Amino acid sequence: MSTGFLQSDLEELKSLGTYRSLKTMDSPQGREIILDGKMVLNFCSNDYLGLANDGRIKKAAIEAIEEYGFGSGASRLVCGQMSPHEKLEEELAVFKYTEKALVYSSGYMANTGIIPALMDRHSIVIGDKLNHASIIDGAILSRAKFERYPHVDMQALEEILKKLPAGSRKMIVTDSIFSMDGDLAPLKDIAELSKRYGAMLMVDEAHGFGVLGSSGGGLVEELGLGAQVDIQMGTLSKAAGCFGAYVCGTKILQDYLINKSRSFIYTTAMPPALAQAARLALKIIREGKHLRAKLRGNADYLRAGLKGLGFDTMNSRTPILPILVKDSTQAVAMSKKLFAEGIFVQAIRPPTVPEGTARLRLTVTAAHVREDLDHLLKALRVL
View 1 (tube, rainbow, N blue to C red):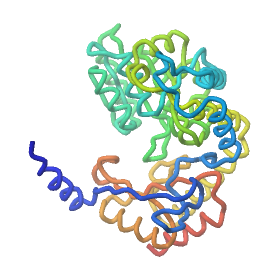
View 2 (cartoon, rainbow, N blue to C red; view 1 turned 120 degrees about the horizontal axis):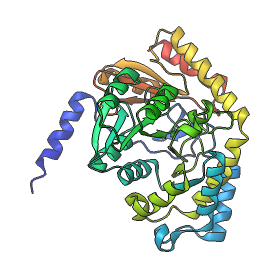
View 3 (cartoon, helix red, strand yellow; view 1 turned 90 degrees about the horizontal axis):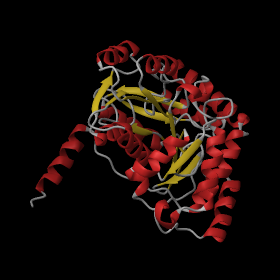
View 4 (tube, one colour; view 1 turned 60 degrees about the vertical axis):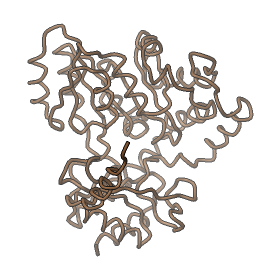
């Protein structure tokens, strides 16, 4: 088979300013990192609470390796189920005020496993147009009819729901924090519509977990909507500083996914050391009001500074702070100039975001200090 199209397709990406390449980090994750041999301030990480290099979590993982080894050896339905997995799920369920939890090896695997397990070709999945790619792929894999409404447009969502047959199996899926825009889903309105029209409601808290809510439970907790959300999914790789994902809900949901979710059934269990480390991260999150306060303060300070410089931060209300540039080539050029000044900010371009909305995506963490933020604002002032 000819592979000549590979090079031509890559050349087209380069001409459009959407070609991607990897940078190599030679340091732990943190506010400062060594990237391609250069020490830079890091404004790209989703390590919102600064836990990825936390000494307590590293110690928990090392001790777990000594006790359980590293690899889990098999899928959890064969012989890969280990006590750290079980304990983590028990603690997640308590934390999220649900009956049960189930841990997946990544957020992508969770969304592409949950949705196809629950929905089929006779079902309807309805989602926000800016939902994460893993939600979109999960809906496609389910073979359900897939309806998408314009971003946070509740009138459009209701119009879709009105047209669906009564008694049909339907699910509304939404991110809580949208990962490229940094804004929030109108979750109270979505919950009300899901109840009125008899739809299941699934919320992806990947960027809300550990960040929002009095104990870090996410937007669902912050709005007091736990009883109205059927499926709470989130990741352990962002604010928790670890790896993996979870889904929280009823016991019957857990049982169903164990038996029906292909990305759970047919993959090796996450290493037990990761599960053990995530247990400690969960405890730190639960007790980490001071970390969330620091994170909010940093985000608010940087947001005000960006607006003062005339940048369009869209509707961000979170530690995700986009600077709308629109043109992909210009966004890449701005990223390169910042890197030369010792600041790492990634340019985000289509297809990750819609055409004409290329941007710099800044993320601030609780680990950043005020001097870091001022240095970034000073560098942006002269771009």
